[in-house]
Image (cartoon, rainbow over all chains, first blue to last red; front, side):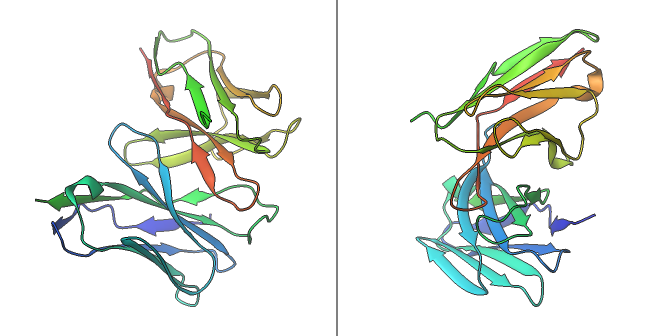
Length: 115
Length: 112
């Protein structure tokens, strides 16, 4: 059973701080990694994708990937109360456009940003 | 561009009743998915369709059937609803360039 593990939280940070969300995965062959944000009562929304080792930045969000350690993280700089949500990590074992069509999701980390 | 749409938004069924959840996407995506989400269980794949004309079981297919009606539409049917099928159901489609999936707004189903 390929697994994706996340700390369920809740992770509580003050407004303006850096929130760090972590995810580990068991399939060493995994190639595609995604972070989704899910507000309470809403559907998951894709916020970051990363395919190569290292950092990928998009605005206040940075995704970090370390395939050797089978670890992917999401940093949120200057956290805002509007960032309060559950963050889901998702993994696919193939590269972009590969033939495996399924994502494996972690159970999510609840982030609370306190004003 | 509406993205992925789902109907209905809410539904209450009695045990043994049947219903079909509808999903449509206007992004010309090939692959579509049905998930259920339960507290503490995360998102679990029920069925998926890699392309028009094909469907495959996911992690929790028992009690469900699907139809890929055409490239746009992928429906999920509960033939005889059970209380264990009380959940939030999400439909998703997969973009052509990567493995990202895009989700519909969900259907909240309660089976009494």
